[in-house]
Image 1 (cartoon, rainbow, N blue to C red):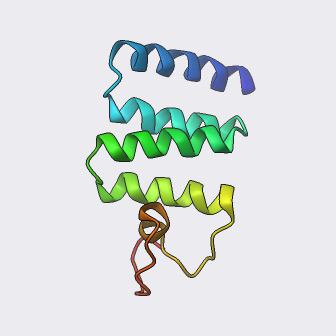
Image 2: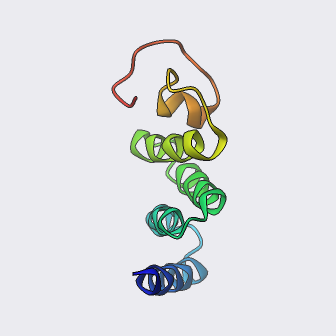
Length: 95
């Protein structure tokens, strides 16, 4: 299984090398890095995808989830707040 993630990471890296602004490739490389246990690299890729996607909520939610895991953010903060690093204090569908 690990070899499949390595192969996926290599393929996604090739896509990113050819198209550095491909937010989808960065997003899926983030998932791949997470599965490989490379959580900080996963966060970095989700952050790039989020920036390239102009703050799309689905990208922010994924990024926030990984930040929560890597940096141990409180579970009371929703993933969007975690990703934007601004806790709004409201109940959120992205929690």
